[in-house]
Amino acid sequence: MDWSSIHTYLPFLLKGAEMTIAITLISLVISTPLGLIFAAAKMCPWKIISWPVAAIINITRGLPMIVVLFYIYFVFPDIGITLTSFQASVIGIAFCFSTYIAEIFRAGIESVDRGQLEAARSMGMGLGKAMRRVILPQAFHVALPPYSNTLVMMLKDSALASTIAVTEMTRQGQLIAASTFDNTTVYTLVAVLYLLLCMPLMAMTRRLEKRQIKGA
Image 1: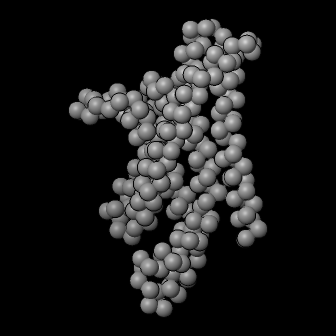
Image 2: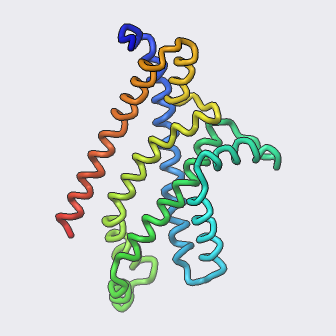
Image 3: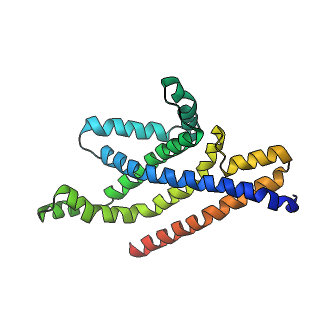
């Protein structure tokens, strides 16, 4: 390992880290409301809505994310939808994770005793108001630890964007390693940077889990 080259590689990797963070945050902003919509649709009593959404969730969760990214980036142009590699990566990652988030929120909502909804309705609350004030706050409390863990997974899986030429951190490492052949130093730096990004998120997840156990 050539430690003397770290100062040369680091600026390029940090630039890639900025792209990694951007992909993660934008994907999170898109996937969270989409996941909520999927969760609500899957729980809808009307089968014409719940069945197709359940099928979409199950199919997407059963596909490797890299296949979804390839499909969006390489196949969509055949039907007239051309996206940049960045756009394709964000859409692909956000869509895939929205299905996982949907299951997290659905499980959180179903963990709340149905009697609480009936009690709220008996007090004159409409369905929407009862969900907002009674059910969803408790559901979010249950869903928060696995949801925060999903953020860690999203950050790590953003590395898959490198497969469609997005110059995030992994791709920057590949380019540097290809030109310098200093694989050990480059990929060690990439690993360390990913750990530095993930460790605060993992600590937050552990803290939320402990808080949930204490509050249980």
